[in-house]
Image (cartoon, rainbow over the protein chains, first blue to last red):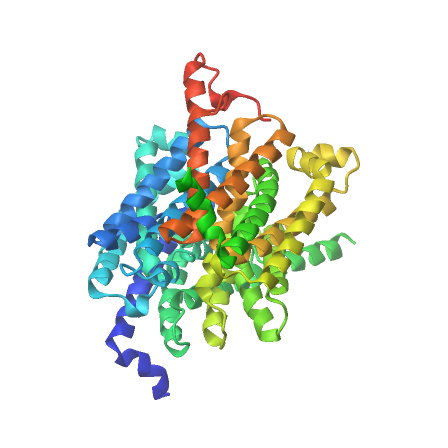
Length: 285
Length: 292
């Protein structure tokens, strides 16, 4: 029994679990919106695009979050410009821009290998996070969460029905810019926790799971945040016993919950749908 | 002239550079041909999903003592099939399902990878290890890439019709479902072939950029295939040589060269480029032209 409490005896574990939970909660909040809009792969693209910013920031000795955020905004801008000005489809534009940014980051790291560890960027390293990086993550996540809590209704109105939003006096463009800024900020925070490749899970999976469990958006948000924070906390805790791969553990937990919801959600689960199909057949026959 | 000669000849005096060049050409060609279809079909990000999902397959194959390429192929295909299954049986959108499935598989792969004792380097799987390609690898890549290319070229008309207009393809009696899965299998195979060279993360670029570049430059599909292959092979060769001279990672060099070509095409393409769009009267901008 006492063995299970061992992680709580280490300061770095306690720090990792709370920071992960906070990041998980914020990302999960955003995931509810991303998923509804069909923008899931933007999360993946931003997660990869911020890598050159991180590498550059470490190289120049700047706060990593600053560089990451800058690169994320550049990538988003690049996608918007190419999308508007060429006849390529959105998915191809996203694919080209984020892989180019990512490649630039990798090249920088391979040319100046001492400045930063590529494994840390791609896979995250919340267990070994430096204090000043942890502070950046916490500040980003906390501020984003606060803004989301203030603006969640406005964002919901804009995402569901833009013309209605305009009628009630909201500014859809400003709110969308706000949303993408928050998304970029959260991918920066998530990069430290789960790494560039798994950021997408943090900003997609909790929302998708919650979407299978409820029809009310308020509840969807609450469920999603609960799933995100609990899985992140538990994932960091479990990774102590598995010797690392914190990001992998967190994401595996989130995916397991999604599969469970997919199979057995009361209304929208696959088993419920099968049961309904059989009952209807019995009734009609 | 002698500078140019040194640029090419010096790297080629090493065996590992010769092998790297051959592999990069093979991989570049097969990905380029496939990328033309993916760009038309709107499947660019399918490559992203399938490539990440090969990781657990590789780990499982290692544990079972099977060829890693077989495991990678199975992992990639499983991702595509699972995505389809989840989408058809729930109300979650396709892009979301795709994100959930491939990130989940990648995460699981990472966890398994840290739990097994292995001589494989995770970073080599993720980023490729072009300069460490062995003769045996070369044969394997050659077979996979050659087979994939052959099937694509033999079936190019069916695949094209399917990518353009699935309804029409069905109407003229093509086995649409079979073609759909053929395309997925080809995608997984080309990713498997690219693993050694560029790794699972940058293969996405190889599967998008050449097709997108060619799409900006021409309206004819046959020409698109040729342009895409030429761009991909050119950047592969030049990127590999360049990485030798600047002592940087090979995969990123290739991808960045492709990105540079894309940028040039985006700005200067004769009919569909930004500048051409500016010269035309308003209302007939580059984006308004009918698709190829």
